[in-house]
Each structure stands twice: as structure tokens, then as C-alpha cells.
Image (tube, rainbow, N blue to C red; front, side, top):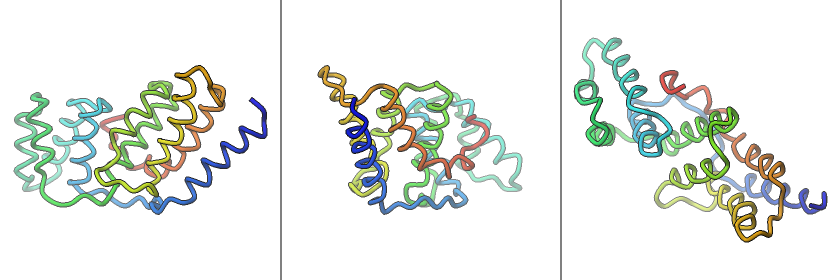
Amino acid sequence: MPAPFFAFLMGLINSILAMTTNTPKPITPTWKDLAECSRLGLLNRLIDLSAVSQWVDGIIESENAPPAWAIELALHGTDWYRSIAILESVPGKTSGLLPRQILVALVRRKWLANQLTAREVTRVVFALLPDGWESTDHMSGIFQFDHIYFECLDTGHSLVTEEQADQMLNEFLSYYNVFDCLIPACVL
């Protein structure tokens, strides 16, 4: 591919990223944030029940009066469907997109460790887009990557090489680097 065209594509992606309204600002996640992160992680096969059990065991051990949902989750921690329901019922509100941003940071970490393919990354990020997402949300940038790379690749008219696509995906995922410190140790 001609270098000017690749530079144009990278400029397009960077301008899309610059238009986002979700400036990454990691905050301390609440139990509801971590419960939603765990629920979405289970649904998207990014984490397993043993990680959720470790997290809940830690809550029970550290709290004088652990919340009822934590005890219930510990008792039913091997039942995937029950665990999903309990995690969803944890009281409170999430801190906006924080649970999803933490999971995309986990996706980034798995991508960099060659544990996920580019297709798997886009599948998971698509699945993590919240209901009513805005086209200005950073996560929507995955649509541009998917179109530029996979749709062209599937039709045999790829606009970018695999190496260039990896560079584009790295650029997209780099936004979530600031959330890396919020990934619970039990899922690593």
C-alpha cells in the first residue's frame, strides 16, 4: 500500500479518536462497577468463574459485614447462569463506561500478549458497546477499524496490510492503557 494512503488512514483514525467525548479518567471502581465488569467479562469469555470467586472471597475476607450478594455469589459461584444473575443484581449504579473500559484494557492486554486475534478483539469490543452508545464514544472507533480492515479483507480488496492493521488496532487500544491499573489481579 502506498505510504500516503496509509498515512491518510492513520490520520482518519486519529481524528476520529480526537472527536471522542470520553476522555479516559480512571477512578476507583465501585463494587457495582466490578460486578458489571465481571458479568460482562463472563458473558464475553474474557474471565472465568474462578476469577469471580477469588474476587468475592477477597470481599468476604476483608469485610466485617460482607454484603449479602457477595455471600450468595460465593455459595453459588460454580453456577455460571446464577452468577451472572447475582452480578447483575448487585445494588448501585455503574460509573458510566468504567466497567467496559476496564474490560477493553483487559482485551488490550490479551491482544498484546497474542492471546486474542484482531477479529476476536473487534468482536468483544462490539459486544461491549453499551445500549444507546454515541458515535462520539471512543469505543465506536472499532467500527472504523472493522470496516477499513476486515470488510476489505473479506472481499479481497484490503486497503491495509496486516502489519498496518495491527498498528491501527494498537492505536485504538492504546486509549485504554490508563485503565490497565484497574484490572482486578484475580483476572490476570
